[in-house]
Amino acid sequence: MSVEEILNKLSQAIVDGEIEQTGPLAEEAVKAQVPPEEIVRVASSAMKRTGQLYESKEYYVADLIASAEAMKMVLQVVEPLIASGKGIAMGVVVIGTVQGDVHDIGKNLVATVLQTAGFEVHDLGINVPAKQFVDKAIEVGADVVGASAYTSTALAYQRDILTELNKVAPGKFKFVVGGAPTHAEWARNIGADGWAPDAWETVKLVTQLVELKRAAVPA
Image (cartoon, rainbow, N blue to C red; front, side, top):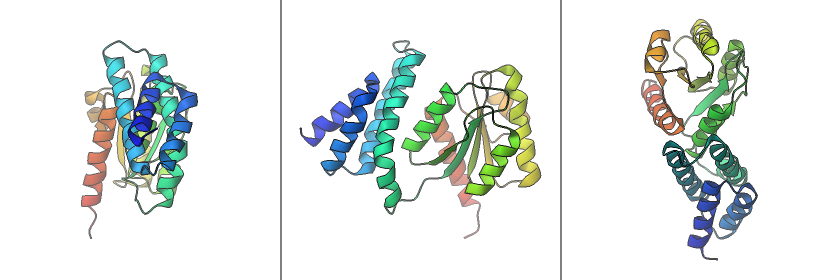
């Protein structure tokens, strides 16, 4: 197959959620001398297409999950190549679902899309205490800490994380929130640096925050 055919097949396999196909296709692209960054760009575009299909009600949550899992297979192939190169991550993000909440579909999608956009992402998983967010952020030198909450009863834990961050390292990290019951007003009320309605808007938000944070650091 030509390079164009490989990348087209890879893109469609992600959109279709063909988990068993995407890894081998990514490996084939690497063998064809396609730069890892280009493979990531194709995968990210495919994932964006999946998101559009979901927004238009043509896809369901299960389809989103399948596409995200298919893209992870691509990342497993290309991430070591990107890491071994001279490229520098766009920023470092710590993300997790707050204490008292075990939902992770949205959080996983955000983490995956951030990775494909070039961020170094540390996913803490679900039911994560505030202190664990803070400890990890300090350990990895995070630029941004992101907290997801799917249930309204778990919202208060997002505020707890920010309180802990401000107590231990005031002003050191940008803090963003997301999840079904969250909204821009909630983020403003608790003093978060931002909120986004979906994974793709989260990438834009995090990119802006990292640029602001680094611009504020004296040369």
